[in-house]
Each structure stands twice: as C-alpha cells, then as structure tokens.
Length: 151
Image 1 (cartoon, one colour):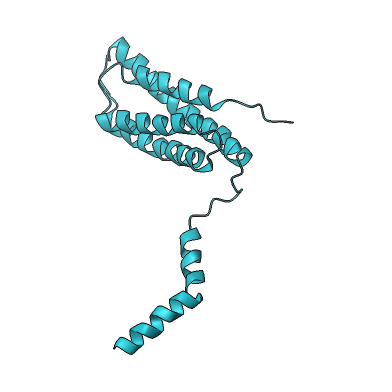
Image 2 (cartoon, rainbow, N blue to C red):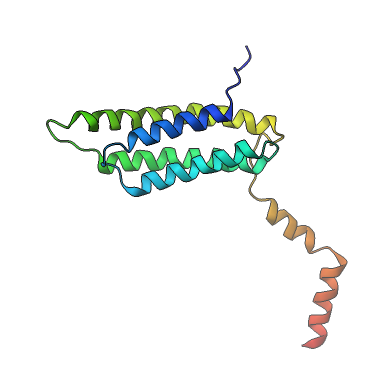
C-alpha cells in the first residue's frame, strides 16, 4: 500500500487557515501566534526551495515543537467558564483540530524529507565528528607544535 502524496503547499495552507481561525477569539497568547506563524514561514521557505533538505527538516522540527507548545498553551489558557461564547468554541475547536492534524502533517513532511534525500535517522552530531577528524590533520598538529614552542 502506497502512501498518498500530499503537497507541502496543502499542509502549510491548512495549518495557516486553522491558525487564523484559532486566533479569531483572543484567548491564546501572542506566543501561540508567533510560534505557529514562524513555523509556517519555514514551511513557505521549504516550498520555495524545492531541493533544500534543511528547510524541510526545520519545518518538521518546528511542527514537532509546536505540538508540545500548543498543548501547554491550551492547558494554561483554555477558558473554563460555564457558558463560553460561540466564537470561543469555534476558535478553540480550530486550534484543537490544528493540534490533532500536526502529527499527521509531521508524518507527511518526514516522507518529503526522505524524498529530498534526507537520511532515515536524523543525526545532529555531525559537527562533533568533524572536530574529531580535525585533530588528526597535519595543519592542526602544526599549530599544536607551534604553541608548545612559544611556551
């Protein structure tokens, strides 16, 4: 069974509409808006740079982080009045729908990451490996020997 291809434009557009609708009633803080809109801006960058692995990876990481921050925002700022306004219920419903769609979006963005040439395992320790490789270079040994002469 093959996974259906969903374009990155569709994912960004759906989350943008849901974020706008979630902010139609002022119950969420500015950090919710800034976090989600900045992640969507990275999604636009991933759309514009079709060959960039970094853009898709950052969009994937941003979506994953906003899942956690959205849960915190909803837990802290959800109104528990006995009779909330209808606009609040609509706004909260769109925010919750956006939160429920984010893991599905992460799955499809990860598929796009792999299609663009990304590795199956995401490794952030590449700079550490380069530092260990640098120690064995003749240039690094030369600088070390010069430092011992100066002392």
